[in-house]
Image (cartoon, rainbow, N blue to C red; front, side, top):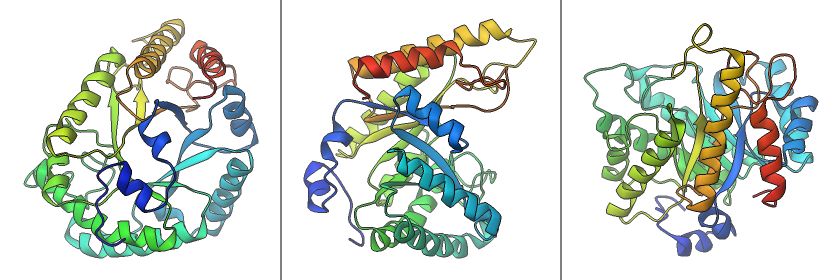
Length: 319
């Protein structure tokens, strides 16, 4: 498996994933979650959603209380029949100057986790690493171009990808969601370095959301086509956020509800009609803020977008 670059359905079959139809067929809808307690799992099942995106903070792993709770929550989700995409980020040590040590330690960590949790079929490596959350790929260093950041991220992938395959040969390796302009250089850096991964992921935010959702996806598809890349494209975060739409007094609660409903409805319906992405993950189930953009309000009540999504999922066979 070392150094393998997936370029199409033939390659997927060759490594025995048995997921080609799911990856390249009709786009499916998933959901980002911050918690997997009993209430959250019940809400996810009520929605009819199976694909979830859940975070593992590498920096917290040696905290026994965090680790025990995380493992219990993951097991609860698996027992409920959910299919988690686990995004792993936040290094416990290191910085840009010591990035090579971080890459090596991360690869070891991921091999251990992939072997430990065979029920996790997809691992996403880092989060919006092109723009922030860590500087080990050059974010926050103006002298490091986006293209160079992509090349550095590829260096990490060349260690972590084969490590994950050793731990769990059938696991999918998903890139961290790219947040910068898709044609801005980071993705080109991945291609420069022949980066190994199974699924390319991007994130889309904006207002109106449908415009960013469509344009960023098509931009990614154009770049992929130009490089002969037939690997799947996933959108692992789409939605509205306070960085785009300010909180009160910018919007009243009813306006938040209307904006969120229109955003989710327009994107999900568009990708169902003409799939740009093989899978999309809406952000987020709940974030504990009434003027945020979770599907569940802080008081536990469902927003209109929640009710619409539940109806849509039931009418579309839980796609």
